[in-house]
Image (tube, rainbow, N blue to C red; front, side):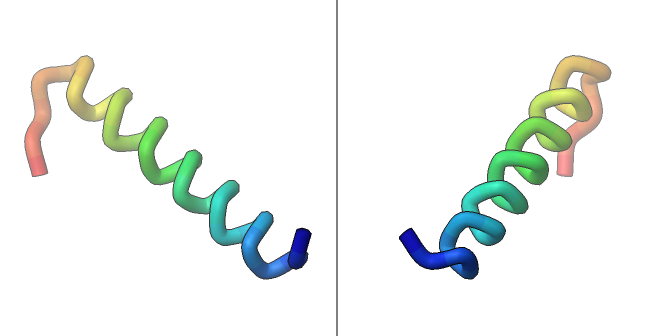
Length: 29
């Protein structure tokens, strides 16, 4: 596995979790 892909997946997961937390608060983007 390439290191670049790993960091990209991690960043995507962080973004997804951030959007989820915003969604729980009733905010939309």
